[in-house]
Structure formats: structure tokens, C-alpha cells
Amino acid sequence: MNGLFLRSKENKIPIVIYYIDSQNNITQRTIRVVNIHDNFITAYCYLRKKVRTFKYENILSADTVRKRVGA
Image (cartoon, rainbow, N blue to C red; front, side, top):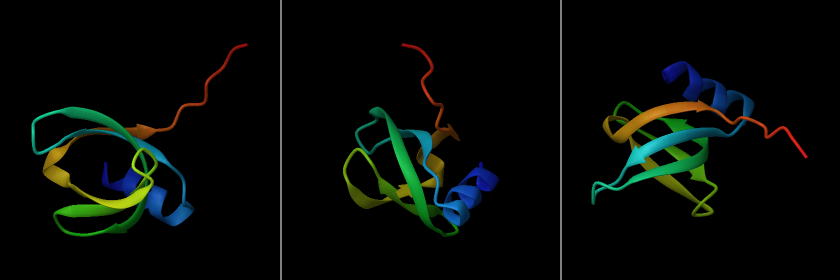
């Protein structure tokens, strides 16, 4: 996952994460990593339209954004 976060930061590309919040709700977020820290990342969240902080321990998975194919 760290390599994906680093690529997002360096190339300014969005990625998708599944995140568990403080109320134990699982959300899917499209983000662009702004900074990488020891225990968390700061990233622009396209859902909230703000820079947010995400704890590593709460990120369940991360992947590249897949483009939709079809009509």
C-alpha cells in the first residue's frame, strides 16, 4: 500500500481506499495523497472536497481508480 500512496503523491493521481471511520462505518473514498506521515496520510478527499487525515490502521485496502468501460 505504501508504494501506491507514494505514486499517488508523486504523480498527483487519485486512488480508492476503503476506510473504517470512528463510528465503525466502512466507506469508500477516492483520494489524492498530499503528504505521508508515520501513522497517517493527508489526502484530498473527493467525497468531502477537502484535505482530510486518514490513519494507516483504519485503511482496509487501497487500489488504483478503474475507468468505467461501456456505453
